[in-house]
Each structure stands twice: as C-alpha cells, then as structure tokens.
Image (cartoon, rainbow, N blue to C red; front, side, top):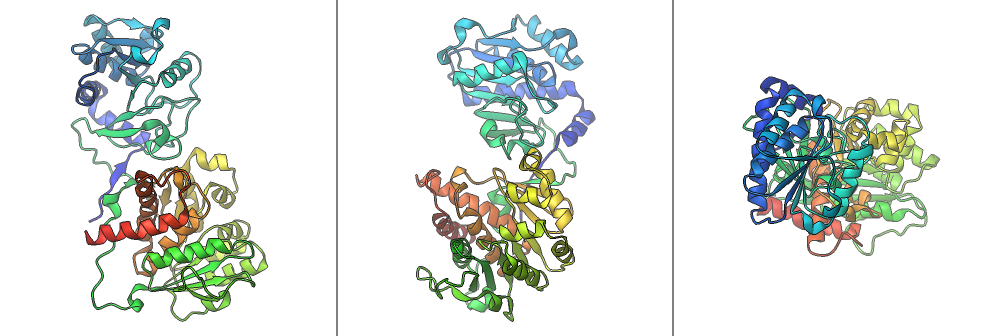
Length: 493
C-alpha cells in the first residue's frame, strides 16, 4: 500500500481554520509549541526569545510565551501595533500582559550575543504573508539569523511563502518548524528546506480530511512499488530499455543513462549513440548492447525509450525525436529532446496525441523554454509550472530541483522529500532518466516509476552523504550504484 502525506495550500488551510475557529486553534497551537520546547530542550537555561508579529501567527507566539514562562525565563519582542491585532491575537496579547509578561519592541542591544539566548521562537509572520518583508521586521530577522541560536518557527519560517517556498524579501533560518493542521508545500521545495529545518506536524487534535491534490513523496510512499522477483525468471521478464542520445562530445550523458538503466534491473539495455566516432561497446559495462540509433528505434520490442541525454538539437536529433513520438512504447524525454519540443509546435502536436505514457523531466531552464517564460517565472511557483507543463504537453512531468515536483495531467502533484546538494553535478539528470526508464521497462506504471525513481535517486545521494561521500564531489556513477543497493534493500528486507 502506498502511503502519502497530503500537502495543503494556504487556501486549503484557511478553509479548515474557518470550520473550527481561530481562537481554539490558537490555544492548541500555543500548547503544542510549549510541549515541543519542553520535550526538545528540557535543560535550556538561557532565556527564550519570542518574536511575535502583527497577525494570528503572533497570537500563537503570545500563547506559547505565556505557557513557557511558567518554566523558563521568556522575553517577547512584538513587531506590530497592538491596536490593529486580529481579535484572537489581541486576546492572546492581553492574556500575556495579564500574566505579568512584558513586551519589547526590539532585542536589547546588550543581548545580541549567542550565549544570551537558549532558543528563539519565530512568530513574526505565518502563511498569510504575501509581500516582501522590509523595515523593522527585516532587521529582526537579520539579527536572529546572525545570532546562531536554535530557532523554532511557528507554522512556517517568517518570510517563506507557504505555497511556493519563495523567500519574500528575507526569511528566518530555523532549526525546527512546527507546522499546524497540515504540511505546507513551501516547506519542501525551492528555498523551503534551507529555512525550515526539521518539519514537525501537529494537527491540533483535528483530522484534516479535505481532498487535496498535493502529496509528499517519502520512503513509505514508494518502497514497496516493486515486488520480489520470481525465481523462475529470465531477462525477457524485465523489459527492453532503449537509450538514444550522445552526439559528438556529449556521449557520456547517454552512457550514464544506459548504465543506470542496467543497474536498475532492465533485462536488456540498448544504447544508440549519435556520435559517428563512438565506440561499439562500453568497456566499463560491456553488458550494454550498443546499436546504431536508427536500429534502436526499429526494435520489435521496446518497453521504454529514453531520448535526449546529450542528443543535441540538430536535424538528426529532430528526426530521431519525430520518429520516437509515434512509437507505441512509453517514452521518456529529457534534456535536448525537451529543447526541441519547446521550439517546434508540430512536434508538440504529435506528442499530445500519443496514447502510450510520456514522461518529461525538465530542469528549470528547460521548463522555462517549454512554457516560453523565464527561469524566475518557473521558480516563483514550481508547482504551478510543473502542472502547466503536464497539461500543455499531456505528459507526466518531473520538474527537477530542490524539492523536485512531479505533476500529472489530471492535476495531481507530488513533492519529493529526498536528495541533497551533492546531486548538483554533471550527469545526475542522465542517471535519473536511466533509472526511471528501467523501472518503466519493467512494467511499473509510468506514474509510479517516476515517483520511485525520483525518491530513490535522492535517497541514494542521502545515503552516500551520511557515509561521508558527499555532498561535495558526489558523482553520478556513485549514485546509480548506491541506488541499486538501496532498491534491493527495500524489496527484499
């Protein structure tokens, strides 16, 4: 059974809040924060600094401060106008004052050293933030980020867009983020992982049962997608994978994809290189079957074709793509195949008429060309961008990057929760394409293959990093070998 945790947009969270009322939820949030601090930092001696902002996020902070001051010394810095607080936040503010709490409007100048504070609780801005942070709140955030003190963010780090992961002017860098009711997508993509730290979910005694389109991709979601192999098996049971690409001076890209496909269990891997001077076999992995690219396209049985790694964009490459688009086999398009599609309306028309599964795997630059926009446009809303590609190209879409987004033409989407900066090196995308293609060739539904490959690729990099082989200097060849080991662990242990 595949298990996914839902991801809730700001609008979806607001709908839940309206059903249950802000005041009881604020009280529960304050209790949850207080409990987390006591469980996580039971021996903290230095004062806790609580930053409270002008909205209900600030109200959560005031409730937490009132509860925590029964155990710890607490200082509250309020960045707002008490007269303009929402009703429930205003009540929390008054309760804090009634409990003997004091409110400062800045961090005292003689308390700007790390050792002055045991913890900072960030309650400046929550999911409602829409504009860049400037002025005094920005100065407070800069000060907190410089302190080097552990930070617990309430719901989302202040300055981080809950829906997109964009930094709105500046953002708190937290060690933990306690988020409420449901997970927010912005915590897991783009800048989110660099600011949120460890994400802790508290449902506030509610079950958020709304139907949502987004899901978080975790090991529990994918690890059982492949079943153990029967002992009575042969290579014909595990599919024929074709890989076409590798024009002059770019053969390594296609070779990496093909090698990854073999290590991921494809029964046969046919590699068609477009470089006329390419060798006729791979001396490092002679199990690969090198053929002229034209012959790979003509294979009687092809269970998946990966097209694009190192392919170039000349007329030969375009001809290969045009012929591949009319194949009845599942098709994975990467790299230069995407650049060709983006610039040729006639090829796109053929693509959207396909009945077999099509997967496209752009990085932000390729995605920008596919949607005729800028890279900044793509990154400003990665989920929307991936969905737009999926719908316009009628293809399962993987938008690569921090918190890779998988989007389906029917509107469902997933954010991957594995990987690290070691994947930011040459050949990683080619390796991922080969992993994905091999899983499709083994008759895994394309939607599941994309999910499994994406998470597995990142998890392999994570495992290597944990053992000291990254992130600096991590190579694509290391990742594909680790991915094979990890996949077998999931299937057989």
